[in-house]
Length: 376
Image (cartoon, rainbow, N blue to C red; front, side):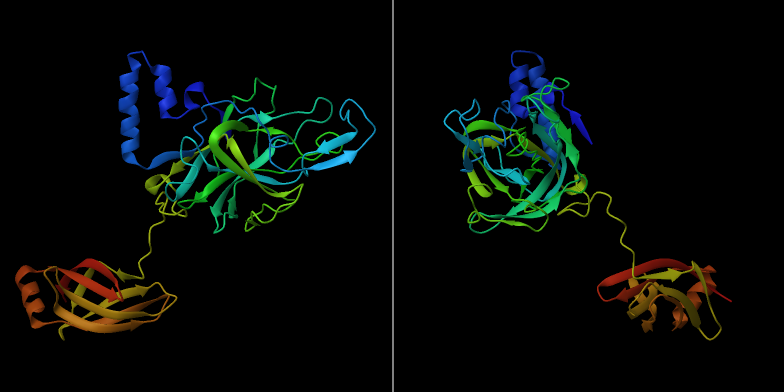
């Protein structure tokens, strides 16, 4: 899902406060932002989105490209036509930022990605490809990166349509885009090559000049899929790796952690399914026979057998009335016969019934249930 942000959502907290400076709302904003930060479950990293995107993926990535001899013409007055690089799948990400954190400060879930910019259409020709993705990538020793996960497809707005431009911030909500601490989130396009129109791919205007920042790019047909290794030693004139100093990808990640990250992501607990106990004690009321035996029903969830110890007693004395070793088949309900102490029978006759505690210990797991004990 994507949406255009309200201008107040475009920058970091500091930008918001500057816009409120000089008004009575500034103090209120400080308190609100402090309260939000105190939860520590939601944070942001990446670009502060504090300036418009003025550079693009066609003209401003550091590839040598190809110079093709052609008859002199307005596009190539010196007789050399320059193609900046191949129009193929491209991943770009911030490796350092003059302001802000380029990498995830913690493990969690990228619950939102905010992207500033648009796809530049050609003056003459078909509309540009707008489909793109976001990816979680992990840095590798030596400066490379590996693609871990790719989001579902999204659409970037087209420059000049519906007021979209270099200052347009669009918000996207990836599904289950998990990130580890220290990972980057990249912008991943599909090139959008069209002969004679988008020769070096669609110019995605999502970059800004930023002294002190730097971004990396990797360009390769089918070379940015999940599991791909992007190495700085893999570089040609038209594709592979490129380091781009003093440039910033205008991308910001809203990171959910703990209760704001799905349980499938590192450290996430949101929507975590209940852990099923390995066994269940069946029934709430049990009767002691004249021979001082009680028959407990126990369901072993399986598939492995349940091996351990079962006790019957009181909370302070868990094995006061009975104790036995059990070995029960998996995915099956079994009857376990316990021989109880005379003390339990005497206590039942005195009170008519006794609330006792059954503990089933299976390895490091204890399954407990309170039951009512009576006599026949």
